[in-house]
Image (cartoon, rainbow, N blue to C red; front, side, top):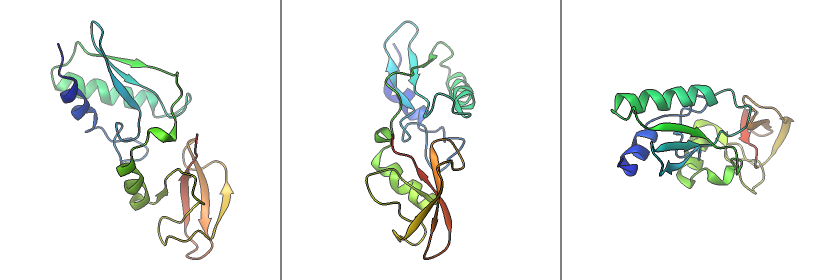
Length: 148
């Protein structure tokens, strides 16, 4: 029997490779620990084609092996699809501090100066899960998580 809490604590040590301000548990990629033989860490990528998915799997495997959990598997689960609602509230503030406007029903807001006087530059930001915006007040560009 594995200690699920310990496994989740280990997963929380793995930072997202594209957004190193938050870990893969806060981002909602880690869905849980599956009770199976052997047990599995269940993960859902932010996008089916997310370029970081393989790297995240490798990081999980390395973390599990280093902690002596070589019998724990990793299961990719695409349904239900990942949603920005799975990002934890504490992660929203971490994103803002990092310079990314977190998802939500609010008007896009500059994470640097707090202004809502912004404009969409491109639906495609630095990663597929973000759009590129600019602040009309401080003139700084920023990414914003796409809500889905």
